[in-house]
Amino acid sequence: MRCKELVKLSRYLDNELSLRDKEDMDIHIKTCPCCKLEAERFWELKKIINFGKVRSDSDLFWNRLKLRIDNDLVAAAENIFSGINAWSKRLIPVPVVVAATFVIILNIGVTNKNLVDEYIFGTSFNKASNLLLDNANTELGSLLY
Amino acid sequence: MDEDSGYIARFKSGDLEGFEMLVKKYQGKALNIAYSLTSNLSSAQDVAQEAFIKIYNNLHSFRFESKFSSWFYRIVVNSAYDFLRKNKYQPISMEDPACPELSLIEENPDPLAKELVGWALSKVPFKYRSALILREIEGLSYGDISRSLGVGVGTVESRIFRGRKILKDILLEKGVFKDAL
Image 1 (cartoon, each protein chain N blue to C red):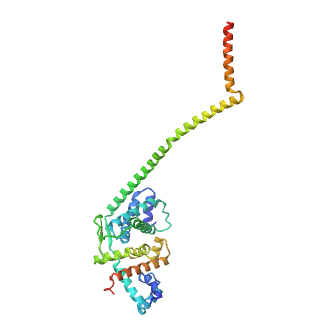
Image 2 (tube, rainbow over the protein chains, first blue to last red; image 1 turned 180 degrees about the horizontal axis):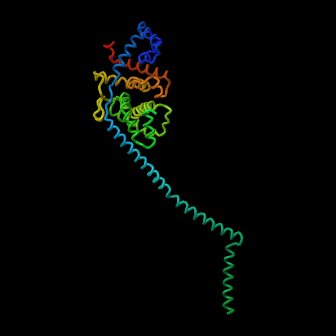
Image 3 (cartoon, rainbow over the protein chains, first blue to last red; image 1 turned 90 degrees about the vertical axis):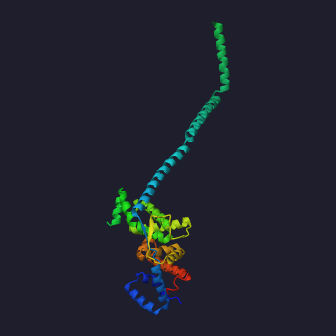
């Protein structure tokens, strides 16, 4: 049967209980077979869980880390430049589009001007009449002189 | 100002040697935790290096609201978690010829038992395992583990208890405790 005091066992083994609680648990474990067995197993576990310490050359570790930091910095700088390059490639069509837009606007302007002329003066009529008047003036002039 | 704060202040003022001192002070702890969580020296090296890279990248924004060590343990545990998730890691062997610069100071006289415990520990869910490792390998108090993992002390207590129980059940099933008890 599971004892309700079992949950305190980890704190007890890790010296995380208050002195009063620890003394109570000392007494309880002596009288409770469930907690006693679990405490013994946990103690055994604490002994075998220790894998040993990793031994490393601190200078070698640092040199490797430093190299990685430097490489990361270079890579970050390259990323910034490649980002700028990518953007600059994307920006190449911009002047072309601006120029094309400008030409279109000018054309629309010219067209609009013709339309206005046509609306006010009637361009095709004016051109024909001007041409006739010019011819007539020329012929008249040659006759006079 | 404690030693760590001094190193961090030096680093923040542009002196890389401050960071170097910090690395040299904490690399052993990082490797021990990483090794206990991955059961492999080469993986431990990768996890520890990754953790220090994260620390390097974020140390400028460290505001001394908590102890550096708590922050450090959290980053190492998170790096190990990320590593295991990315690599879908299966512990292969404690021996690792690919990482000659690291070695173990053996404390467990029975290599077979050590391998079995390593294997059993890898079967314990990560959240229980990490709390257990911080307690058993680093000897942190429940309060320190609570600050390092960002959970309450009650949660730490229950995670350590659950971790031990799961580990014990696995080892019981494998007959490790048969003779001892």
